[in-house]
Image 1 (cartoon, rainbow, N blue to C red):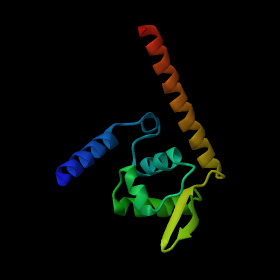
Image 2 (tube, helix red, strand yellow):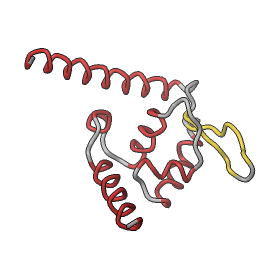
Image 3 (cartoon, rainbow, N blue to C red):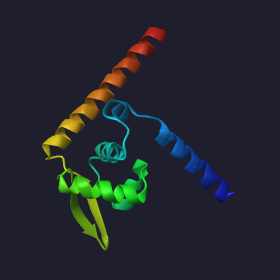
Image 4 (cartoon, helix red, strand yellow):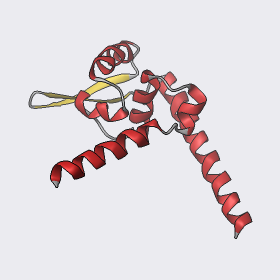
Length: 122
């Protein structure tokens, strides 16, 4: 039974990752933008590279894109726990600030549209 539940959860997760977000709809659905969206959504947390696989990209793609993001100063290492290195999005970076503003604006716009639709229906 456990294997069936795991399969169903994996299937649901993969299908939910295929649904395009508002942010990805605007900036484009690419591996780099998926990683950035994941980090922006969890901007108050730090992550290992393994955690970042939840952004929906492969290990190889994550490694190559992560290296580029680190060189640009978009992602920074914040601490080490044992052998694990933890990273987060660099909220001091001007590019990151603009991306966060865009993300938050798009989310607020979608929330307002949803609320208006619910008010019209009710």
